[in-house]
Length: 116
Image (cartoon, rainbow, N blue to C red; front, side, top):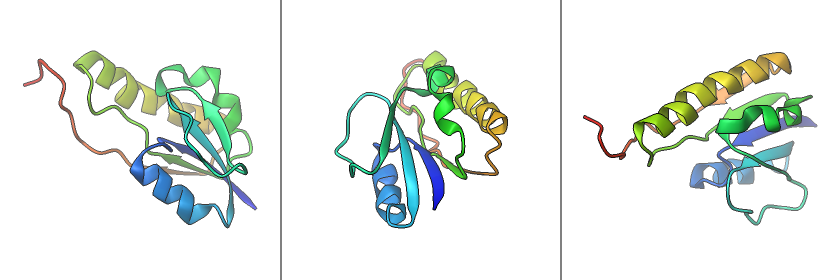
């Protein structure tokens, strides 16, 4: 059975993706704050995009990485750290763990203050 890892698993899109994949894949998910009510077969990894090194060992033996996590309601600094730097670090971690397929999806929404 192929193994997948999903960031942003608590989002509506993440939950729908899990529903679609859970019958045919072994799933690990990254959750930032909440502890969603997922199927007990799903491995829950607590963490965030700002601390990838704390949980990246969970990427070992993963076949497909679905990257859905991102910040849309943050100031410019947080947005940059999570969406840009976090994604770059995640891709580097995926390379270190020899993940062959990355599927990336991020809504291009921003509603922070001080942005022109």
